Length: 283
Image (cartoon, rainbow, N blue to C red):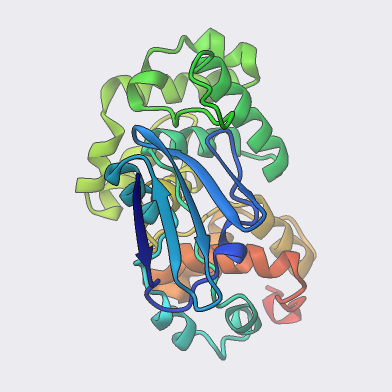
């Protein structure tokens, strides 16, 4: 058994970050994250002094969960820079310990991106669970959690099988096509702009899918969730008309290299009434 104690860099709340992070491969219950990582199951919890303890059957799984929980990615600069921002200011104060929880594999982030297109997150997460369970029918551990899908797992799937599970035909084909042409873990070695360009040129994908892969699969904060349904709905209400995808990119542009994290705070803030109903956003 391996146990490590990690003092997160910068403000960090496991409860806030992991509250909605449950999926087929992990869960958050009674203050404890339990996740299938690498070759083992790992668990993490946070003490009142902020220290996060991770316990696992292997050092590799413990370090993977450390990365998944983003414990070392200090976002203090983001909080300082946008504390007085007219849109995100209140969210940065009230949600300062929030960091997006990542997927254990880039392949799972890609699957999540495709499942989440144009639907609410609950529907998307249900579809994602269904696909992962179908691809790993015999991989349930004692915890009931499934192994995160690998690139090879998705590459071996037949597009018609993904369609039968509920994925749109074109999007399912995009997953299989991309996974058969590229080992997705290699995206860690590419600059963010190159990752976004590679994903966005796939028919059936686009900048929002690239944003999910960057945020959750690669742990990067630069590329925003352009075209996110929540951002579209916000702008539609604020501007009193239909809006285009590029307008959500325009909304996130002022946050520069923090556009991805700004997306997370914006959406979390919307759900908690922390984002002003912006007459200032009228165009």
